[in-house]
Length: 629
Image (cartoon, rainbow, N blue to C red; front, side, top):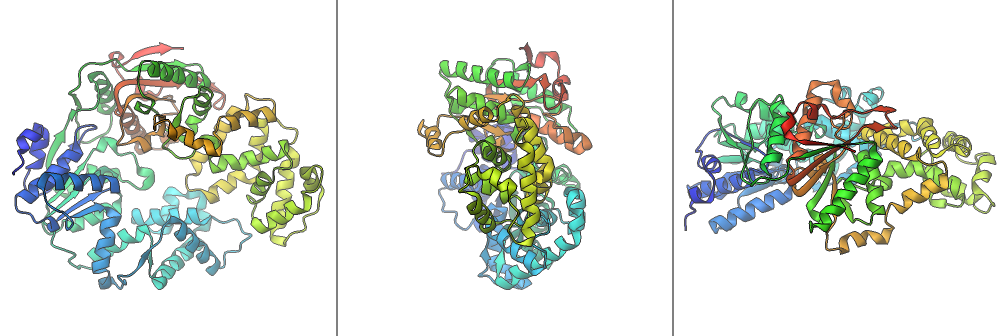
C-alpha cells in the first residue's frame, strides 16, 4: 500500500520529501518535524525505485538512527538492513572494513574507547621520554588536542594556537607524542573514534570509489565539523544528490569543532541548491514563539525564518529579576512546588543554564525542599572531580583521620601516585592528629615526590586558620590552577565552578558547618536510587547544550544576566557572542507551555551589580512580562 504523503505531511514537509534530485538544504526550525521529513524522504526514495543499499542516512546519535530506520521500515513494510544508516562513526567503520585495504589498513582492526586511548597515550609519553616528574598535559588533554586537530583539519601547532594557547610551550613534545600515538595504533591494528573519520576521508582522497550511492541524507548538519563536511561533500561528488537538514540558528557546538560555515555556506558550495524551510512549530505556544522569533531575528543568520505556532494561546513568558543567586534558587523551587500542586509531573519541568557552575545554589535548595531531580549535564555540582579535589583539603582539616581525602590531595601533586600516598599515610595514621604529624615530618619519599609533599604541607599549614572561602582561594592559587590546565580540556568551565564554590563558602564562617551543609545537599551513594524509584518523576537540570532535542512543559532558564548568558568570555569575538544568542534561542524553544527566565541582580563572586542579558534588552516590551523580587 502506497503512502499518501500529501495527507501524512504538512505542506512544508511534503515539498521537502518530494523535492527530486540535486543538492537540497532543509532549514528546519525548532519543533518543526525534521525527523519526519528525513524518514518520509527515505521512504519516498525507496518507493520511487532507489534501492535501500544506494541510500546513506547520516546522523549524530545512535538513537536518532534507530528511530528513523525503524520508522522507515514501518512506513515501507521492508527490512532495511542493507540501508546505510547510522552515525558518522558507524558508517565510517563500515567503509573501512570494506575499503581500508586500499590505504593499507587491516579489516580486522579493533576500535578502542576513550579510556584505552588515554592509556595508549600514557605509553606514548613514556616512549617519548617525557619525565614523570615534569609538569605536562595529562593523556585526556592530549587526546582532546589530537582530536581537535583532526576534526578541524589542522596541524598540532595551529590547533594549540587556536584552542589551547596555554599549552603552546609543549608544542614540540605534543607533536612527537601524536606521531608516536599514530604509529602505535597502526602497529597494533587499533582505531580510535577519530580514526574512523580520518581514514574514511583518506580513502575518499585516494580516489577509491566506496560505493555508488544515489542519495545522501544528513541530519543535524549544523553540528558537522570540517572533516565531516569534507566527507559528505566527497561522498556526493559524483551524483550530487545530497539533502542536508539542519538549522543555522541552532549551531551551538563550536567547542566540539562544529563549524557554522558548513551550513551557512552550503549553497555557495552547491550553487544549484534548492532551499526549503520548515517553519511550522508543533511544540510551543504562540507567546513563546513570539519571544523566540525576536531573539533570532537579531542574529547574523544568513537564512531568515519565523516559527509559526500550531498550538493555542498560553501565558506570556515571564522574566524575573531577583536579588542574588540564592533568591533565584528559592524562586525556582517555589514555582516548581506550585506546579506540582497543580498536577504538573516533575519530569515535565526543565531547568536550564549556560554553564555547570550555575546549578550549584539550585541543587542545594532542591535537596533541602525534598524535590527529586536529575542532572543531564554530568555529576552534581559537589560531586565533580575538581570540586572534590579542593574539598579534600578542607575535609582533612576538619577530620584529620579522613584517609580517602588525605590520599586524594597528595595524589594531586606531581610525582605522587597511589603507592607513595599510601606509604605517607601509613607513616602518620597512628598519630593522634595525622595532619599535624604530616606537617612536622621530613619527606621520606623518592626525590621526584619531594616537591609535591612539601607543597601539600605548605597548603595544609596555611589554610588551617583561614575561613572556608579564603582556604579555597589559597588552594586554587597554590598549584591547583596549573593542575587544571594540564588535566582537563574544559579548564575555563572548571575555573568558573571553583569561583562559585568560593562564593558559596563566603556564606559560612565555620568550616565544619560549610562541609556539613554541602554534604547534606548531596544524596548518599545508596540514595541515588531514591531519585529513580519515584517513577523517574524528577525535575531535570541541564546545560543548554545537553538539552538540545528535548522539550518540557515548563522551562526555567536561570542566570540570564550579562556574563551568565552570554557568558563573559564570549565577548572575545563576534562569532562567540552570536553563538551565545543561538544558545538563548535553543533554550527558550525547549518550552511547550510555560517559560520563566530569571537572573540575579547581584553576585558576591562578581562583586558588582548584574544587569539583564543583552539578548533580553533587545526584545520588544510585549515579548514578556517583568517581575522584580
